[in-house]
Image (cartoon, rainbow, N blue to C red; front, side, top):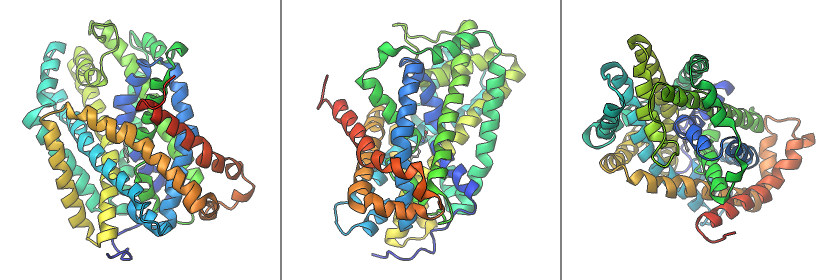
Length: 453
Ligand code: PFF
């Protein structure tokens, strides 16, 4: 097995390029499509608080762990574990990551395809809410769905073909500022519309009585998914990182950017929902709960855009779905980069061949899902809600007890001259060896019914 040919690997060109690429991976459908409604239907501010704890106390330490493993070994997730231990078991952690990446990308491409199809539909399709429901049922199933999944996978593969700095870095450096700009403008507009104040209140009002084991499990799963952790995406991105970079600082930027954008997305989506309600659009199910996120994003919001005047409706509709599509694209490229880098490193395959073959393979799974979207729920549960925290647990265990914190800190010293006297050095090992893995394990056992209280 060829292990050492690194000619097709590549490196980030600049620090900001890496941070934007990693933040681009993190900021995605998870932040805009999933997070705001998850907060609103799970106790508002109470969920937010638990989520923040999960991101900073579990997510951030795991992110530093992934990046340090990647930078040390300059390998894909499987090769990285091989390089750091002779035990044959540990590369399985990387395999699990690659598998999770493949399966997550397969359904993510389908939902990303919907967002992209709506960019066009916002221009050509004018309808009331009832018609949006019919429209969504049509676009989210069958041939139309398959076509847009294919377009989205094509875009992802074409960026990956450009390599690390000319493909991924260049694309994310362009898309991330545009995405943030669109988000800010839309928040500014919606904040002063009728219903917005109720939306803010519903988003942030804490209901601590809702805190429960399933809620904590949801918040943890959302934190892993949103920060792109547990499947080696950041081992891969870390493997292109220069020794000059301060890894904990870069990880802190990425965590803050991801959490910040998720929070901002809520400040757009929730007021927009209540604005739609004030225009007579129903946003609650028969049992009085907020509708599911797919219905809110793909039916309620388009209905809202089209209740504005035509020009404003088109501008807002197109901007919003472009925002979602770009957020999704900067994430799909990181999802595809994981299996691609694995094949490049471990089988010495050229990037072009690897990206096209793997992209086509995953597209086949996406097309199957396109014709039966009920599969999304189970794949999401196994590979993201359970799979990513499980991967995170194994990464903590590996770093803490196999590679050892001492070796990891030696790696982190590159680019971080003040490490020795830092609080980070005092605290991170405790989180990575004890707090994070125990919290993850407890939550996972609880979720699969092993522990109950
Ligand atoms: N972080 C992405 C989102 O929030 O949409 C999803 C994701 C991307 C998960 C990359 C995992 C990953 F490796």
